[in-house]
Amino acid sequence: MKRTFLKTVAVALATFAVGGAFAADITGAGATFPFPMYAKWAEAYKKETGTGLNYQSIGSSGGIRQIRAKTVVFGATDAPVPGADLDKDGMVQFPAIIGGTVPVINLDGFKPGELRVTGPVLADVFLGKIAKWNDAKLAALNPGKTLPDQNITVVHRADGSGTTFNWTDYLSAVSKEWADSVGKGAAVKWPAASSVGGKGNEGVAANVSRVKGSIGYVEYAYVKKNNMNFLQLQNADGKYVSPDDKTFAAAAASADWFSVPGMGISMVNAKGADSWPVSTASFILMYKDPADKAQSAEVLKFFEWAFKNGKGMATELDYVPLPDSLTAEIRSKVWSQIKK
Image (cartoon, rainbow, N blue to C red):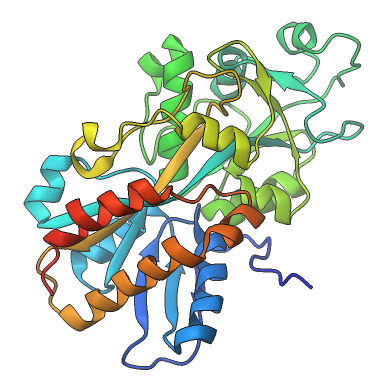
């Protein structure tokens, strides 16, 4: 019987702890995007090795703050830190898992994936230019569907978020108006008149589930765990696709990871008939010269184990595990920079 690894609650802080607070336990903090995956890996790792993981799911900006403050051994972010900042901080960065961000809705009478949207129309919704579900632009994309005369409430992240960074990166790629007036970032000024914020993917999922007529964006594991409705999205090849591990993997297939310092590439709006347009990686931040080298070594052991043994668990939650060829490069090119 599958265990439930996340609960839909609107909270500012979610912490997953496996085992007691022993000296060898690993501490990390940051992105809510990979939280379900890290929780699942951590439970299995604890059973096999006795080493626990205490991970605070507080958002990417919080993870960056905590690793810079050296209160955790690793930080996690979906908004990659630029190479110049990594050099300044004396840190390395590497991807740990790939997933996708999904537009979720609370609209009665429709099955998950039944309604479709293009990137430019989605941007107009988040801009507040489309404020009702029966707007002509949405109706034109969904012929034969009777869309309700119902107000749209935009649900967004209220905290600094890598999920927001990737979502706004996508909206900037498909809408010049969004790029010019809002732009991309871990936190932005949301323009829609009717909007509400939530902390973490958990908070956005909870608010979308609560507010009738709402639309938001969450990592796909939260969609599955909370049985949420979602929109099909048109990709760069003009094909309408649904989110799952296969469409996320298609978007990542041509990624050139070492083309950017810190491996911080963007996969939004990737080409390919099967590609999900808002696919992304979640990244780990660690110091090259860690204050506690033993704890740092434990983190690398955890991710070494996860890369080798956690692929099936990742697929169960519709994340995409990194290919062996990439993890081999991470070991040789990134982990080799961390002092033991």
